Length: 82
Image (tube, rainbow, N blue to C red):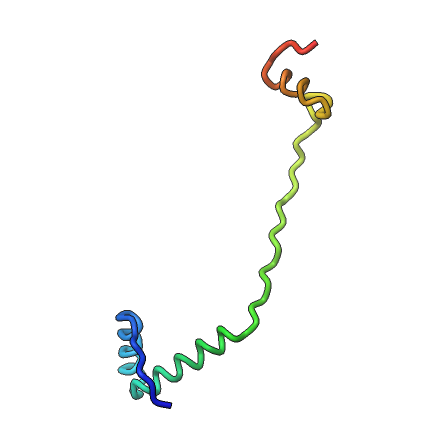
């Protein structure tokens, strides 16, 4: 298939460098790069391993009950709640 591609300058420079290094035609380099890239794009991407936060012991609760928000705030702010 014959087509026209507009390559970004950095891509064109890389392709030209590979052409010189490999001693291949520009067409061969571009075709190989497209094959590799399209195969990688089509391959199913594996799910990354889920990150687990390590547990840390924070000791006992110093406020008493956290069920009473007003009391917890008063203790945290140093107010005399009772």
